[in-house]
Image (cartoon, one colour):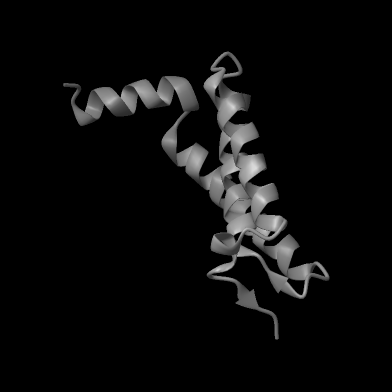
Length: 100
């Protein structure tokens, strides 16, 4: 079994320094939230928005390590999930935020 340090070292090689990665990811997620809030949607579909944030995560990982093919497959799957949420899957709408 790998130690926490070994796991962190492995992840840094694959995805870059954690502080840089999570700062960048957090900034991108905040921008996505702001963009959704400014849209003319009657209400924000949280399931759709969260799935799109997962796409961003996979995009960032792919930018750092384009050779890791799993990120592309995962990103496609998250796009499919976001599409299902946007097109009426009831479980995706459970925690929608009503717009004022």
